[in-house]
Every structure is written in structure tokens, then in C-alpha cells.
Length: 123
Image (cartoon, rainbow, N blue to C red; front, top):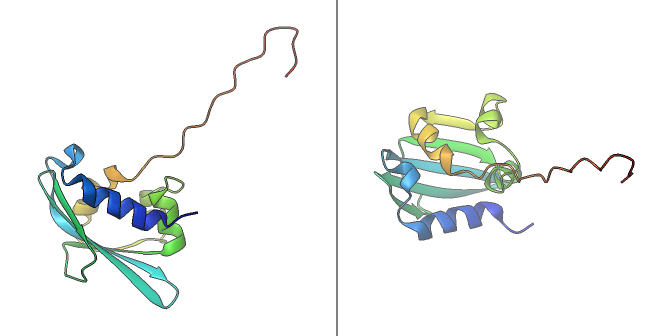
């Protein structure tokens, strides 16, 4: 799998404006642990305007997670809020900022429903 975390934040930074955040303002720093190394992503939201950097600045909300888990969140394979409730994600500061931001995480991949086979036919 490619680096889903980097792709998520880089794509977010390219958007520059996100309608889902039109009423949200605040800063978040994501501290993503990868062994002995910590990757940091700093996100600024101002009423839909969004900026992403790799700065290690202070933030209204600091989110911590392991790299493997955050890759799954960024890829839509894990739910950030469920991971938070399980204690796999840590949050320091204002959790309301994260609540606004979490709308940007992708949902689970769509699964194709199988149609019922016509009567008398087997699949």
C-alpha cells in the first residue's frame, strides 16, 4: 500500500477550500508514530479555507496515532472515532476541532451487493 497518510494530507492541502468545513475554524496537529520516528502534519481550518504543513507547531487539538492505524483511517479502512473510543488514538486539547475535521476522513469502501439469482438458477 502506498503511504495513505501522506496522500491524505497532501490531497487535503491541494484543495485549499473544503465546503464541509465552512463553519469550522481551528488548528490540529497529527503526531503519527512510526517506530522511533514521529511524522507531524499541521492543519489550519478557517471557515472552509484549509492549509496543511509539516510544522511541529502548537495546535488547538493534537491527535496521536500509530502509522499503520492512521494509514487505515486515511484509506477508509478504519474509523477514527471508533479508534478513539478504543484508546488507539489520543487527543489533547479541544476535541470539537477534531469532530469538525473527522468529516474529511473517507468512509469505508463501498461493497457491491450481490443480486439474488433468479428462481431455479444457482450462482
